[in-house]
Image (cartoon, rainbow, N blue to C red; front, side):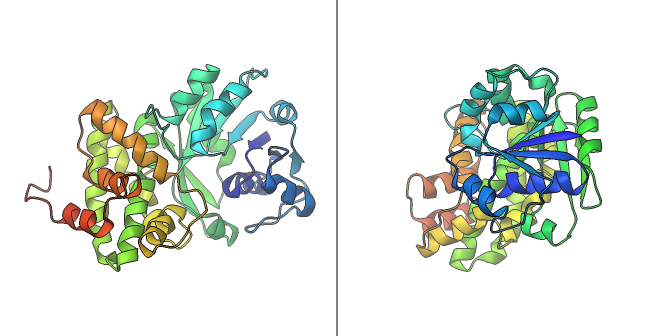
Length: 320
């Protein structure tokens, strides 16, 4: 199978490595001005991995699109709309697209598959690939389970067949809405976990996990999805990799925020918290953890005061 990966950051480069590792013909694209791509062209390596010679590198988007039967997109979630608009100027006939990002569009709260469909009209040919795992662990040969979801189950099953291997066992996602919301929102819960670590309150992560899944299940249900999806691989299943791992950018961002240390890598949860506030208002669903994170990160409210209030809220039923 010919596969093109668009995006040459940490995950994009891994997706190219992985696809070649399991036997596919792979081309990796990055922008000509990208420092990541320039470094890959010079060394065929980054801080995480060495790319096999069999992975072709290109800065020509048309060439990458022509090469791939399946197109994997791994870029920042907030860049997707503009990038999809650029893709729509090319011939995309017969291509299947896999979005490997976790986030929601700020300003609209829209899921990434919706954003992509609005700009390309290819919603029926588009899937999402999410779930737990870290590049560092996969490269050490540590296996994990992930999920692929699309509007139509036949596309989901086709892509699972293409990408499954002993390193990654894929499950069929049958609720695209819940899968995308859950995958995006777990990064916000990851920010909160990092803040708890920063204060030495790590024992509160159990409560954070229990209440985090509960509030997101209410949102997914109100939006028309299956409330149980949040308890699967896209959200709860990804908590270990996001709430506890030293490799998690979102957890580290939260911890460094509390410690007053700079953190320069992408933490999608910062943007997702803002988008979730739009969805909270639109669907009239209370999201106390997500709101607390938003108020700390965006409104610069006192973190210790806000987190203390969050876990000492008025008494109510656990099912509420």
